[in-house]
Image (cartoon, rainbow, N blue to C red):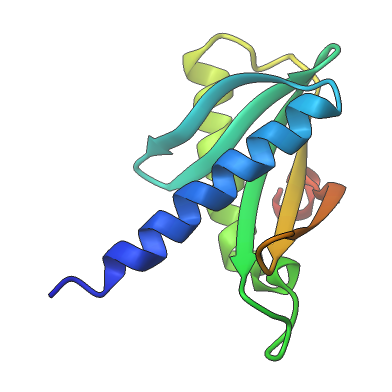
Amino acid sequence: MNTHRPKMELGIKAEKLAKQYLEQQGLVMLTRNFHCRGGEIDLIMQQEKNLVFVEVRYRKNTAFGSPAETVTKTKQQKIITAANYYLTSCGQHDMSCRFDVVAITGQHPAEIEWITDAFQMDTFR
């Protein structure tokens, strides 16, 4: 029996919910689940002239901390690595960008926290 399947399904649902929420806020979806050797980005969206790299985190409850707290420095570095690769491969290295976190807690209804500019690329340079 595959115990990862329910977790994957929850992750997919959380990403869909985050995508819908951000689209309602005026962002436009560009790419989902962008992978490269050094990392992955859940959602890449655009808000006006800004590229927005979004990490989606889900937790059933906050008994062990908020979902946003799980975006560690190591995870941030992997997202930044993937973002640099994306920017270079798409020829958009001079485009303004930011890193957001969408933290989702619970279900029916889920609580959504959108943290804009959750971390910066400069932190790791």
